[in-house]
Image (tube, rainbow, N blue to C red; front, side):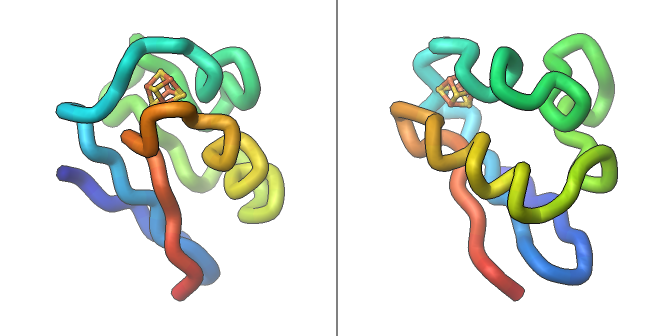
Length: 67
Ligand code: SF4
């Protein structure tokens, strides 16, 4: 489990749940880039855009909470 935070939201990443649908990468590749380390760059987009992309994660491997 990893967490990534900006001032407004915290992204929670549970790699054990990922079903590799790729929705996150296809939906918002500037934030979710599996070739980068760390693969989540929360500062690359606004919180609204990130929350919308995470809502499309079918496995709930990616979730968020508002800070
Ligand atoms: S959208 Fe969710 S299940 Fe699909 S690749 Fe991304 S984290 Fe994994």
